[in-house]
Length: 322
Ligand code: ADP
Image 1 (tube, rainbow, N blue to C red):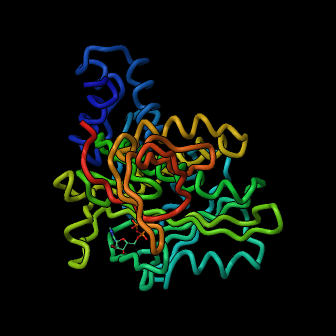
Image 2: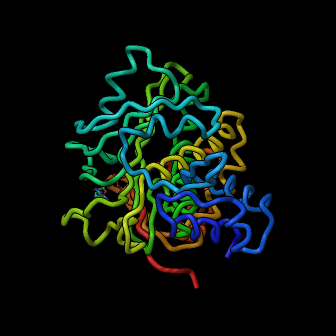
Image 3: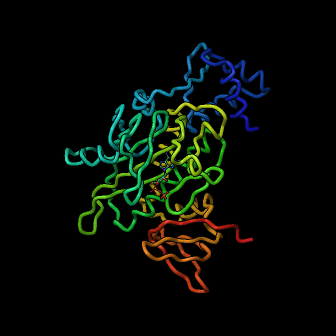
């Protein structure tokens, strides 16, 4: 176990009570410097750890989304995140759309406790009961509209890595926009945009994560929550902090045009590549081996010896190649 995880365990075990840095150091037989470095790393991963000059450290499990805005002040991101909290909305994407005419700033996050009309791709429903994370990040990137698929892949990476930072469970990504654990959907991503000629004016990055919510019956075969995976609920604020940090880091690379490093991360998390897949393209379907993603985020599929690019569509994984 890494030192920081040992420190975390001590903090978790003394819930709500401060533990001094020297006590932790003594227990783990390491220096106080090592402890303070571990605390720093834990904070980077998203954990909320308070410190007091005399009392030491205290781990707080914050789940209350109304507090999110105040708990992301210290995450040091380039994007200037600002949270607008709602108890209930039709969909956070709709609220974001309605706000962009009033000149909202980049990094504004619309988050809601529940959505009554959450949306997926192609007019599908995204069920969003209490206890999950349902939010939209408003962006104004000066990138070409062609980057929209990449933005979607990139968001999947941020969500998967943020989940891993907090839970140590590594989700897999299914092209283009599903985040899976044990083959079931733990999160979904929907990127919508408003473009102007050849410039992207707004991108609305919608994310839905099953955290502590019940999984609706309609999707009980295909969906999973983090609570189900871990056997316990997890506080949503640390998870949001972790995801936003990851998002910011990857987004900076994207706007710099560093597409390769995004694709590298995506490939490392992908469960699609190397697999036999069926791709539903409207009326048509193709079946082949998913070889790679290209610099537009398109999926490259080998069909009967011929290489095809897929820009959108639904992918079904068939089985492992081997
Ligand atoms: P896809 O994953 O097929 O691209 P979308 O991103 O369009 O799907 O998401 C919509 C689909 O996700 C729905 O048709 C439904 O099957 C499924 N779904 C809806 N709500 C949830 C949820 N809370 N968790 C997991 N899957 C869901």
